[in-house]
Structures are given as structure tokens and as C-alpha cells.
Image (cartoon, rainbow, N blue to C red; front, side, top):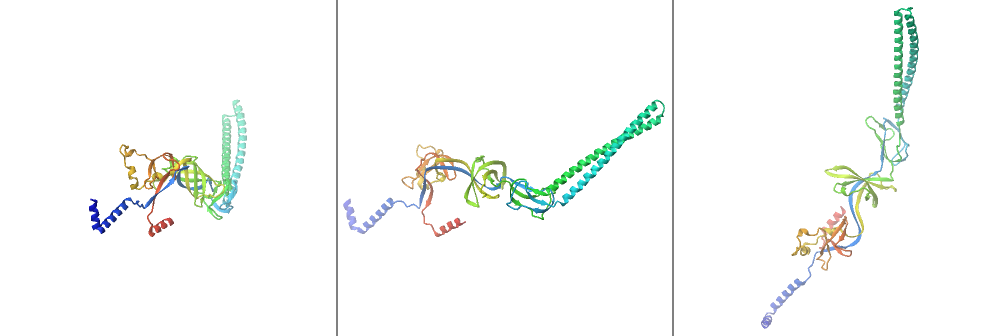
Length: 424
């Protein structure tokens, strides 16, 4: 057989060479390494801290904002403060023209004086009626005694009785007039007190110490307090302590508790992280375009005065935290290798339980073959946005895969699209 093959090769050298080249090429294709256009990137399992946060946005507010108004209508004649002016309790902020109110006070004072004079006159009438009553009582007694002895007629006794009754009625009328005059004085005094109170209210004073954060009037402005109290100023009682009113989605509100730590930033100081604490969770729902949220009140110190009322706060409420635990990137729990690289691992083997019984949480570890990662079941603890606590299944030093990186050459159009997206 070999002799025939050698004979045929000797007679057909060119064909023999071509066949040998084809066989060599086929063998090369069988043994050459497969070229991949991607690679897997991983991160080493290590110990560290894990935080679970709820993100929200809100507004910075003064802890106690006082709106200063007026119950008196009139024209503002003087304004003594401006925006950002510090004020103390009792300090005069503005004045309203008191001319009309002062005239009303003088008018009521005159009414009080007139009522007092009338009361004095009725008091004199009472004294006169009482004296007349005493005279008629003595006269009636005398006439009765004489009538009993027959010295005067029955007609004279009846006339004395009539005069006595008239004197009694006159005393009752005078007494009633006195009570009416006294009531008129009390009414006039009440109106006088109200008018004097309005006169005092023409001077607007600060009800508490703080800083003027809003001024709504200038000299010459006319304010009308007919239907509601107009606001003139807004005072932030204490700007060294502020609060953030954060709107938390209903899906996350169940994780929020009073006393939880909070971090937030504001656009004015993007590099500064402010620390705060949850003070209150308001149970009243706020519905906006069919989205339900709840207001969470967060206390923050503002000793350096950087925070101003109305600033937008980007809030992160720390709902869980653990330190010095074994952790992996949360993205490792979501990572899946290419189908060609994981098909053999995930095919059920004889005797294996049903695929529905597969572990819920697992990661892929880098193996000896970079394109054949090893799937590993893990038990997780606290799950955060960036890292997740691992209770069992991996140990520090293992390398878990987190994402796939493409090795295909990038075209200029793809680079331009990426630059445009980054710029936007």
C-alpha cells in the first residue's frame, strides 16, 4: 500500500504538493486559537462598606418662616428694613399713615366723654328721684294716719298714694337710665380700645428675631386689609438651622424612618456634601400627574450660611449601612456572559434538580480560560446601588466579572456619536 502511494506521489508531484498544503491548512484551522472580538472585565472581591440609599429631590426651607402682615388698611409711609436685614423681636419694620386711625380714636374719646357726662346727669336724676320718693313716702304716711282718725277724706289719701307711685316709677326710670348710660360707657371704651389697638398696629414690628428674606412693600404702597391680611415681610427666624422638604416616591417611602442619616448636594456647591437627618415623614400624599409621593422633612445645620431658602437639594437617604463586610459590585449580580460561553455551564446535567430550582443569586468568576467563566452561587445581605454584601459563596481575592468590553475597531461615526452624547 505504501509502495503504491509513493509511486503515485512520484508520478503526480504537483497534485501531491497541493493536497499536502490543503491538509496543513485544515490542521491549522483546527488547532489555531479562536479570535474573540470582546473581553470580560472584572473586579476583585474585597471588604468594605455597603450603603443602601433612596434618592429624592427637594427644596431647602427655613426652619421657621414668619409672614408679617397688617390688620390695618392705609398707605405705607416708612420702611426701615431691606432684604437680608437682621432684625430683633420688637424692632420697628415699617409704619402706616395713622391720620385716619388717630381721628377715629379722637372721635371715640369724645363719645366716651359724652357718655360719662350723660351718666353723671342720670346719676343726678336718680338722686333727685330718690329724694322725691322719700318725701312722698312721708306724705303718704301722714295722710294715712290722718285718714284713720277721720281728719282727711279718702280722696286726699288716694291722691297721696298716686304721688307715691309716681315717685317710685320716676326712681326706676332714673335707675334704668343710669344702667343704660353705664353700658354706653363700656361700649364706647371697648370701641376706644379697638381704635387705639389699630393705632398701635400702624407701626409694624418684628414678632421674632431673624433675617428679612422677603419684602413686599415700599414707601407709598397702599395696603388693604378688608378681606384678608396682606403680607408685608417674611422673616426667617433662624437661618443657622434649615430643613429640606424632600419628595419621596411611594415605592420607596416604606424604607424611610425617622432619625436616618441623609446626605445631599445643591447646585450652587456641587463639590460640597451636606449631612442631615430625617425628622418627620408626613403621611399626607401628594399626587402629581398620577404619581404619588410623600414629603419627608430633613433637618440640617447651616452654621456657615451656605444654604439659602429655595435651593434645590439632591437628596440621598441612607436606609441601610454596613461596614467591613465582604462585598461585590452590584453589577456583578446582573452580569451574564455571552451565550456561547455560558451555554455548557447552564445546561441541566443528569440528576440535577429542575432549572426552576436554580439559585436566585449568582456571580461569574474568572477561570483559567478567560472565555469560560465559572458560575458561583452566592448568598447576599444588604444590597446597595454600587455594592452588595456577600454572606457566602465568594471570598476576598476572587475576581468577579462585571461587564463585557467590545474589542471591535471603532468607526469615526461611532466616536462622533459618543462625543455628542457626552456633550449633551
